[in-house]
Length: 121
Image: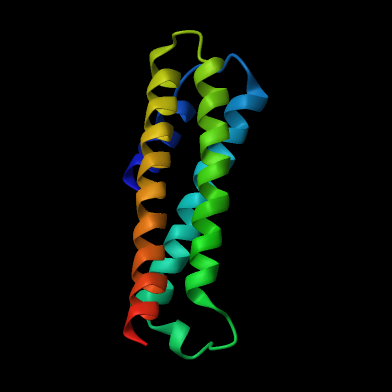
């Protein structure tokens, strides 16, 4: 979350050269931040125990998968349109770092929910 927030703030406080590229990057980072916060709140208050009609591990996995792909695309576009402006380069760099962290989180979520369940049966 911190890397997404730093990437968003870096891009937001820099002079833009291409509006569509950086607005897409900002939208993707904010949507990822909101969805991560949503899943944290679901886990903290254990709402997933009350709403059993939803497969929460699958929902979280799909969120990370779609968010990671969109974040990677946004970071590539932001890096290619940065024109060596330091704030935009920093935003794209933190976008790539957040992409790597999302992949690690997605893998650990998959490993905990799917591999441990299949070995415990």
